[in-house]
Length: 174
Image (tube, rainbow, N blue to C red):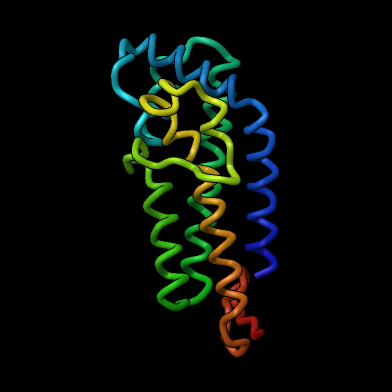
């Protein structure tokens, strides 16, 4: 469980750095959407961000921030896989993990999700941007991080005689 917590802390640190550059991220999405001649549809998936970066990104700043977003999403996906192998869980932890896995899927439609208080990522966008173009994509990481923290909190409440597989193949008994 300590390894999971450490991975989560590391992702949160990367996210804090990313969050400080949210306007750069939005500008990069704007530029790539313009280059793709795709200004009508909202950014609706991780896969769409990746396609914009790979095919419509013209400068290193845009590429760097889009890659940072994609790397955080990949880290979240890897952490989901670790959580899945950690233990069978219970209905609560399984539901949280399923939600996380769905959210970080490359093809999942993010256009309908919005981060709520205490996250203010959507509040930093103009109303039009938040509602119509970027609200889902900027909400993704904080929502998944919240779900993972909730997963850890619920998992720590489970009975202590659960055996967790360690990364080296042995079992750890709590």
